[in-house]
Image (cartoon, one colour):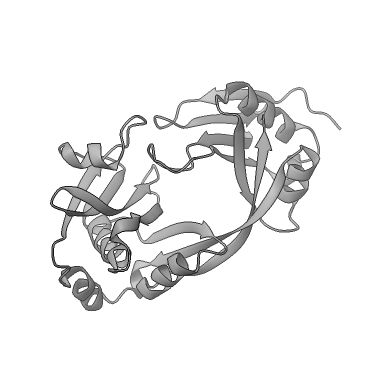
Length: 258
């Protein structure tokens, strides 16, 4: 069954994010798709843009999802895109029908502030790491600057909080959280990332603990932080569990070659 009366409309969003709505003749939004960087700013790690696509259950099997995907493909500038879907879900069936391949397990973890012991968190942040110092930056993430460049610039109001550790100006570790619009209570965390020559000093836990505290100070409406890691990232998962993150769900990450 095909639905040709539903319009696919591009809508404005944050810089670096493309979004489309599927709008029914009644004016209601019955589906949406977005394409955003997998990492919030340029990195030495190759990044694949992330697709999020949703169609209201009663509107499925009418070609709306396929039309949204076509709109994304026409706009995409990269050669691949990726998406996370639940195993054995309608989303996974959609991916398989449309040529997505190479599924890998991704673990999503969630931290809720009501479960954080603030005194213990303060002890983690205040623990000494000889030779290293903590720095923070806040603002809206540009698409052309990395963590080092942001930390050299002034902080300002924005949807992102970046916390880093450096040694004599040499960036050693960092983590960033991005807050959604309209006072959404859940932030999305990227990292922590610790550079190879600085590993083994618990810097990842340090910067992450400092980010958790700083994020709530800057955005007091945030009550949860969600992050995603590779299913086999045992060290990363251990760091997150140590800080109070708990398993939210396991997803399959599929990629599509354009």
